[in-house]
Length: 208
Image 1 (cartoon, helix red, strand yellow):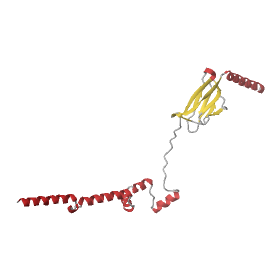
Image 2 (cartoon, rainbow, N blue to C red; image 1 turned 60 degrees about the vertical axis):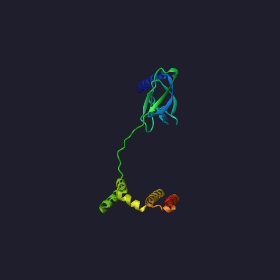
Image 3 (cartoon, rainbow, N blue to C red; image 1 turned 90 degrees about the horizontal axis):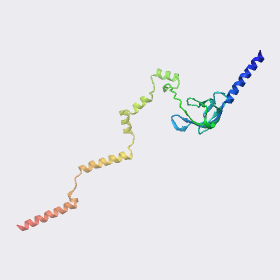
Image 4 (spheres, helix red, strand yellow; image 1 turned 180 degrees about the vertical axis):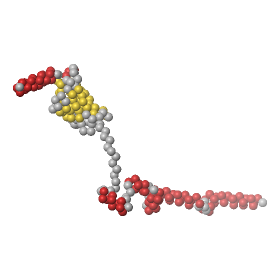
């Protein structure tokens, strides 16, 4: 009975192998791309022939691959960070070769929200809570730094920049010049007007 089962198993294996051998070999070549960008290649992609499960190929650093497979073989493309893709080699390929572009879609994993507390351990939190000295978080610290009291204190303690000093000096000069009174004795045009007035007065007196 055992010999009969062995013979039947051998015949089934031989029949399956004969059916596979009858299929035409096809040279499969192509490039693996990112589905979001045609110009961005995905390097070092694992390519597994699902019919045998033992034939594994890897694309190079440019995403290029080339190997032989039988018609109607299922090829599975896998890479870390991308969803797997499956391709079936069609029948009746011209010239027994085909060039394909495999587009892999990037995996999007939504991670749960993580909140970071200012205490490294539970013991530190317990000590702070019992001492009622709970430190501020980043948001509370930012609010205090941007408050009007904090800005005014920094303005009073920090030295002025060169640009601020220059602007204040210009403002001071404009105020001083706006309230200054020009001495007419220092103006040569005023002297000329005075001389003309005196000459005009002398002529008037001589005419009388």
